[in-house]
Image (tube, rainbow, N blue to C red; front, side, top):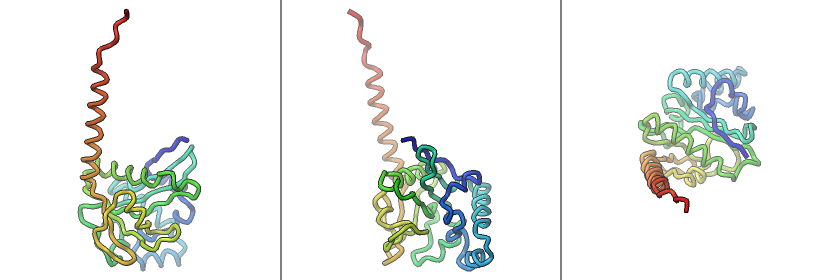
Length: 205
């Protein structure tokens, strides 16, 4: 099974689930979002938002493919690009963090670790861009795919609660701890591989 995660662009936006392509829950403030729905333009607004963020900030999502079939996606951006983030009782997102907005894995591909891989991919991208953390608003009462991610899933992939709330706590993944863990693993691998490479070659008898 070949799986790959590629940056979200306007070219592969159509590979998002149909309802997600026209959802502007995060991308617009509540009033503007409602107006876009009434005007029948949420898909255009979504495309416009992604285009603006790509031009101004850079990569803001990943699409997951398994054997070239799109099976999921994740969206993230600094809170300045996410108007809805200020509407939560546990706002604001910390100034040193990027917001993990939403993500989705198609039924049938869930429970295979793809959600964890998505978060790890986002973490690696943001580490390269010198951010310190990822934060997200979790949904404690999550029952089915929605704009908020389930709080228990976020906790399971390494997030910690930084502001409690009965329905929408704010959670944080500190990338510095991820970085130190990554460096430790890479150093251990280097030592192991180095030891293997330095073993003297067997001489023919």
